[in-house]
Every structure is written in structure tokens, then in C-alpha cells.
Length: 350
Image 1 (cartoon, rainbow, N blue to C red):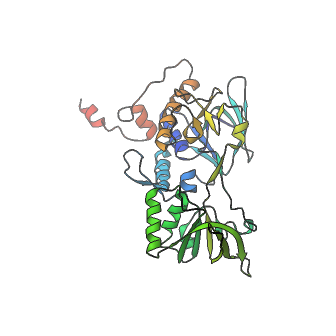
Image 2: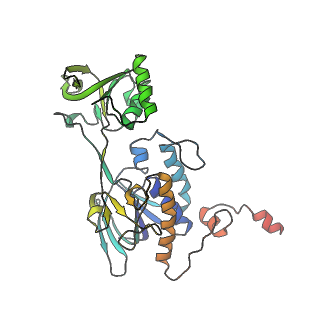
Image 3: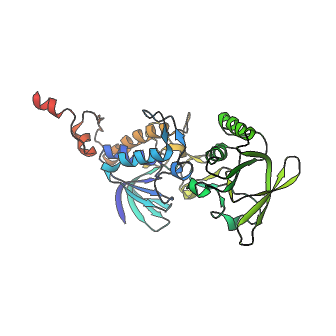
């Protein structure tokens, strides 16, 4: 049994920044995540996608953001429990909690912070016979390493941002790229759609309006070609090496949905003072929470993590006032961060 003040469920950007805000207040954290590495959706779904709305960073890649956050929380030495899911939570009479994970890790924790993004997300699968045998061989629901598609004949399915982004990104790596969507109406950014059409006119890639209705294998069992039924009803054969499917995600709360928390659709209802759920001592930050005016932005999640940290500090130390201290001037903060006092020389001179 691990005894701790707090457990954070989710090691995405908001979960990682929550470690920082807790650390500034002297609270050490354990993190649980179903993925094998920290980063959440940033590293799992769009590691190379640029982010433009992080303060003081005009542009930052998703993976770069996670690397910066990991560097920022180093002074606080968080403990990661990766590749496992929080499956069971029970309350004790004193207001603390018992938690168990899918790998049997057990915690006795005084507080819990849920920072699980959209929950345990699963890709919407291609509904064609024979798909399962090709997954992660020559059919992919996400791009982990763009280099494996270099020199391949790639077909991308979907009409959202992920499909357009990867079709455009792989254009210079793959031998050929064909984008297939059920219609000529897209949910992706207009600039991406315009770029795709421009490349099609320049014969740099192709677009087909239709749906994949059949997979055909080579003698060695690899995917050789697909049948595409167009919006005109005509079935066409298309040879390929790799098929990338981006139909979106099924967000699922998983076991969290059974913990008795007040839910708003697939999100956890919180207040806007403490970002506490309907169960005292359990908090939720980031995309997984809901309150009037909620905006699903990393920036918003960072703000929520800061206020949740102060609320947790107050809960852990009842009756004590939680003082706001600035990292610029506070010797206590400097000690926790492991940095020198920038005004030490001036103080000595005075």
C-alpha cells in the first residue's frame, strides 16, 4: 500500500502541470496513466502538431510541450505509474480514499485529482471484414513514427483535422498519398482543405469521395488493395501499402463513471472555486471536467490546476491559512524549485 497526500489520474499536460502547482505548495504527487509514457493525447495522437496558444511560446510542438513540462516538474520528483488504469476508489470515514489500479497497485491517498483528458479514448474503427488482422501492421489508427511510411503508397481515410494534417505531412515522405472521405465536405481547418485541393491540382496527391467497402490481401497476408465505392456508386480498386484511418475517437470515462460523481454527459461536474467534484476530496481539471462557460483549452486546464492545488493544500492542512507566495521573490519557493535567490546579492548589500 502506497500512502500519499494526492494521486493524479492522467499524465497529460494538465496532469503534469498539476504536479508543478502542488509541488510549489510542498505536496508530492503520484500519477497514474493508461498510456506507457507521459503526455496524454499530445504524445499519443498529435506529437508533431504545433500549438500556438501557450503563453510566452509563439509556437510549440505537442511533444515539445510535454518535454518542457517534464523538465519543469523535475524538482518535485513525482512518481509515475504508467500502463495502468485507476479501477477502484472507496472512501474512508476520515475522508481519505483507497484506490486500486488495473495492475494491482494500491494507494491510501488523502485526495484525488482526475486529469484524464477526454477519458480512456479509443479510435472509431473501420467497419470492414478482415480489418483486425491488419491493425498496426499495415493499417493504423494513429501515427507513432512517420518514418515507417516513408516510400510507401499511403491511403488516408477521414475528413477531420487528423486526416488532413497527416495526409499533408506525409506527402513528402510517402511514395504516394490518397485521401478518401465519404463526401467533399470536411470538418478540418479550411486552410488544410485548401492546401489539399491545391496539391491535388498539382498532381502531388489524390482525393477520392467515397468509402472503403472491401480489403484484399496479398499471398503473404499483407494488405494489397482496397475497394472504394464512390459517391457515384462505382466501385474502384486501389493498390496501397499502408492504410491510415482517422475517423475520430470514442471518449470513455471507463471506471470513473462508476465512482458516484456528478456527471454532465461524459464530463465531471466541478465548482469553479476549488474544481472539486461532488465528492469532497476528489478534484477534476482539464478536458474531463465541466462547469458553465467551460472551454476545452490546455490554457484553461493550467488555470484550473493552480486553483485546485490551493484547495488541496487547505484540505490537507485544515485551519491553516494558505498564503500566496510568488516564485519570483519567495525563498520557500526558491528552495522547493532548487534555484538560487535572484535577489541574494541585493539583500546582502542592504
